[in-house]
Image (cartoon, rainbow, N blue to C red):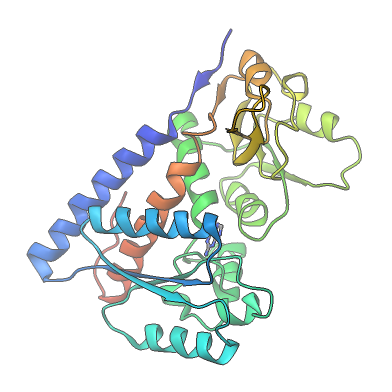
Length: 295
Ligand code: GUN
């Protein structure tokens, strides 16, 4: 039987609508406008597209958007000064420094200079530690979006076998922590994992986040499993005319075996920015001592 398609685009639109309603209420009742500052250093084309999209969706949700575009030659001291300025700005509730940074800048140093309470990416070491110890934190957006879709689909995830393929700080590691927090039995697989096919075939939930086009074939998937494909890979079309986007999972073969699957595009991708807006709203409510929205 063909898998149910988990429509991340519709899910994200619904989440953004709920956020916008809450933002309007914050303005009406408290005169507060949540604000998100995005810092982009250099001119990486993919980053420029993401930053534009973040700015547009921030405004559409009724929030304030502050874009800071700095030249590629920006020094570490200049970037740190910008981060400190945003930390001190009461109109800014969330700060995101777009990654990757140019090679001469130390991203760990820059991220850890962000006020953890404004770290809407959830990358600051204190947010990483809070998540790992099950305390209230700001959670990285892509894994948060994956978890929301999984919980909406399954309800409880307790006792399920989850395999996360990929061990990045942005997706793999925080995803594993979130699934552990939901009482899954979690395996993190990666490029050195010995029999990846065997590991994946045990999973009730597969999260593919490796950045390798269509590397997970359908015959690795346990029948009925839920497959969340985080990959967004540009590959040349077979006829050589332009490109198409594919995930880390071979969608056609996986969709024949899985119980549910996210498509690429239109699966996890749209949820990432929606969760960024959700984190900004959460950070704003916490900063102002207001109840956090139950989104
Ligand atoms: N570059 C690619 N994904 C992300 C993300 O989630 N946050 C930031 N800051 N940069 C990114």
